[in-house]
Length: 152
Picture (tube, rainbow, N blue to C red):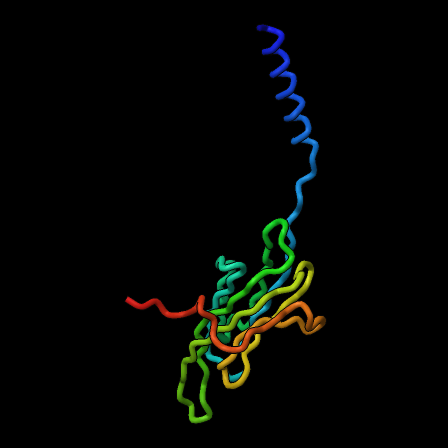
């Protein structure tokens, strides 16, 4: 019986050696910048990648822009995204008005890219964009279901 025990130990040690020498697959990374528009008073927004919260942006005149580095899961090339938030703007009349904004889409191989969060159509659209490569971001019109307010 002892030779079997030694054989099993030798096999186990050999397997550990193989695992230790295998190089791990690294995840990809990309950057996202969110900034205040000229008429914004404040903004709080959340970025979800593959339905996982990866960043919260809190912007105001003292902190008008914020950039985060996002690490993507190993083995995936395309990723879903959603942006959710509240943007408070100053109207020409001087009155403050808060808009709930959201948007979603798919990122196609974003590794190494720099994306920006944009609002459009009087803050009714909120989405990511890559100014250098429009093929990276696919934006779906309308609001994101991930951002829907909870009902109770």
